[in-house]
Amino acid sequence: MGETMELRHLRTFRVVARTLNFTHAAAELHYAQSSVTEQIQALEAELGSKLFERGRRLRLTAAGERLVGYAGQVLSLVEEAKAAVDDERGEPGGNLTVGALETLCAHRMPGLLSAYRARWPRVRLSLKEGGRGELYRTVRSSEMDVCFTFGEAPDDPAFASASLGEEPLVVIVPPAHPLAGKEEIRTGDLRGVGFLATPPGCGFREMLDRIDGPVVDTEVGSLAALARCVAAGMGCGIVPAVVDHPGAVAVPLAGGTTTVTMTWRRRDEHKPSIAALIAYALSNKDTCSSDSSKVNAGAIDA
Image 1 (spheres, rainbow, N blue to C red):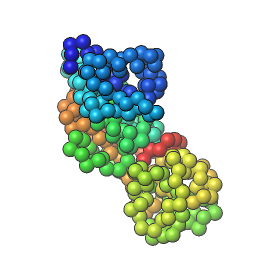
Image 2: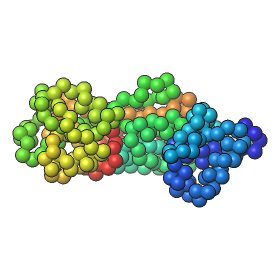
Image 3: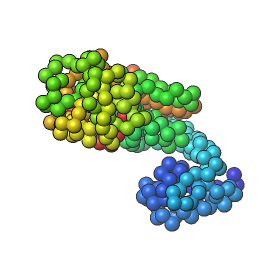
Image 4: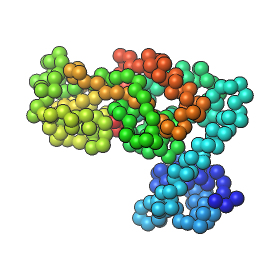
């Protein structure tokens, strides 16, 4: 890298690499699109390599793919250095970006992050929502420090993870469905029953696919849409008990739970703000535990 490389160019590159869209990146960064284009061109000139193929769809070149990881490491180290230099009182500081599935953002994160911020006010928190795959990608690229999802974390040596407890699951069914009158549903009751599910790759779809019996005959893009389709009589679904399901009947699934998992980059766990969040979440699981309130589901959060 040449001496004139600017950190803002790396930050811009990282967002463009994630969105693969100059317009979306410009909006996220609050830049004019021409400024984003100029910064990427300057970075490419500095490196002497094309980072993107500009066709009908923007895509990373092999050089761009290699730069993504390094850009994340450089920017993460810069933030860590700033926090270390600013750490006059021996307390965590700097920026901390946390991501979670939408249900967890609405239901578990407020209690946890409110308590964390009260304990370490010098940390500048940023909370972002996303699907499970997106969250893991942004943690891997160092755009995000810690994420919270349902289910187990990927089996990847770059990641470390910990469980924060279990979330109960329910089967939601149309009001007139034969299962609506049950006090509890067992997996054997689901044999041959038509189910709605989120697309393959989502945590709840993977869980449903492991149950012998249900027939997935409809795919929907979000838990909110799934709940509305169930209420309209299109089939049944499995969701966390905290998800709102107006017009549908929720019946506990016998033994049905999903793990709430916290995941971070193993190499960054010594960073003060990350270490503090990990330690606090593990020692105060009740702070971010479920309550009886319902939350509205939005985009895919499994």
